[in-house]
Image (tube, rainbow, N blue to C red; front, side):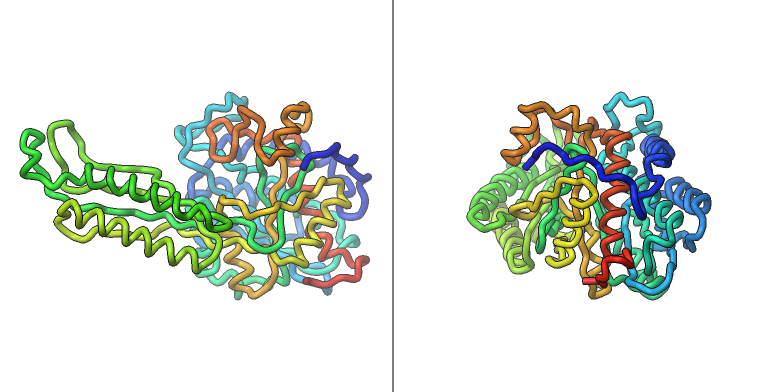
Length: 427
């Protein structure tokens, strides 16, 4: 998977002058990292985006799209409309990185790298505005809120983003990860799983702990359901790609000597096609109802779905174009053999617009941190021991390497549609 990275090509066309401006975008990243905001609370982040775009100049910027989103348009003659998307929200995670620019917000952290995405897209916006002679078409920068809960893209669509701004011919997005900077991974077709969060409420009958014979204990019921669901997970494994079912939380009771009335499970289901999704949801309902009935539940369990994410699907021809473009710009492109089990709401935009889209992942770590053993682990398809992944309180992309990589990769991908010299139109 990992080979010696090719040298970064000389700055030409849209990349001219980029190196001189990277320190500014790195500082923007550090500022955003220190001030994380949760879904639909990204007001400071949105204000920073608006301020930076005003300093860049030329972009027509609209605030409060989908509550806290920002959309900015740069028109530059005839050509395709290319949407470039970055997500803005952070996570309710307490940061443990020890960075000098660590989060100053208690219990909040940019643990997924969305701060890198915002800074990188702003850097791309600067390059496009600075070199109008190097491209032709319309660029639309979409700074999306609330990706972490799966509602941000939908909120922007419900707010008329496709009608209020030029409709895309292609939608491009990227995500930083714990790989060496200079590595880009993606694949044609399904790239990332669909995901559903499930809330399962079980109903028993409470009593004093000294009289369990008078109760229908929902905690015992919940424990049995968890075990049954693990058995179901094992039966799903032969499917390819295999669905994933995880119980992430079990809540019930408040004190040791009271048997409560209810118990709640929070589950995560990840699937790779709609038929399998419907089958597994039906299986979950069957297992939960049967266990509740076996234990004498006082009413039928409630199962509700929330925070759903669609399947992320890359257009094959557009994906080939992106991999070629980032390779020409000095990246080492890698085609994944199978979809990833993580999820994104990025795909909603292209699905609603009826156009192709491409999402890719790129390394944000200092390549110098990867010794031979680390490279060997990556070549086996695993992360080196001790590597902090996205959503970890220790995850910290390199401010110098991640932002530079994010700008270069997204700029190259955009240029493969917007470059008037390549004679190509949108896929």
